[in-house]
Length: 309
Ligand code: PMP
Image (cartoon, rainbow, N blue to C red; front, top):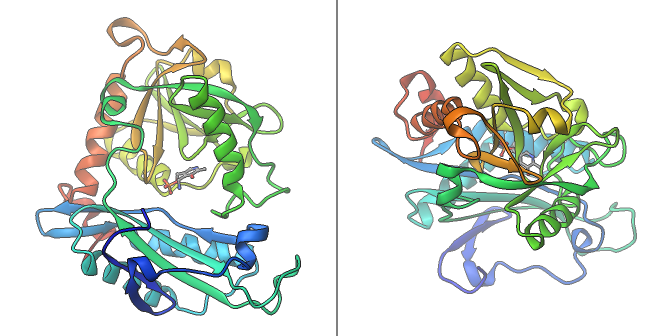
């Protein structure tokens, strides 16, 4: 990923991709105090558009606030930087990665005295969990790792360090032959995937864990809330147990990278009933289609969520 042509926005200017470097004594590299976003831009009939840029940028600033970091740019400047990066790299559809981190002025746990930096990179990135998974569903394993407790790391912040837990869970699941991990909270209730929010459907009602289970307040999760309202589907945020997932009619993951990915198995138990056991469910398919209509600019109701670059 590092050795290629292109431009990356670093602290206010575009630099050549290969020159976007930092020092080995960077505070964030040692202690993990940093925050980032995952954003996508899609090709629409009007041109390339960044999806829910304001919400992602606000979450980045809120993550920094939770970490007591002051980003030395405004939300508007950070938005402009993201637009600039998509343009400069002439991308039609892509994934964007803004990240804020602490500099290398000083080491020691206290970050005081370090500069706060901001960068934005963007590159083409297809279906996160595979094209096949989007149609047939993926195979998921309940992780042996517990998701963050709400008062150990801060779960409403998309922090760099929160992802060690995600990496451990994802590696364990993929080493065991699964596509992704599902993590439970410290009380044993379903929290989220390593990089996705979870939804289950039972008797026509859509359920998702409430945020007290330590799940990130996903922007795609919020999009699903709107889609459910539009489709006349009741949506309930509540505590969910792993066996509720086993006996659900349908289940899917959501995320900027994962988009809407159906889940066909949890712990080798096939999810679903009738003709759709162990594959994508019919309501999931409708939600998925509605999602792709919105992000590709085919639903005028949500045109305000698209920022043309
Ligand atoms: N949970 C975790 C742990 C994630 O990494 C992500 C991806 N950012 C999500 C949920 C989904 O969030 P969003 O829909 O805002 O991308």
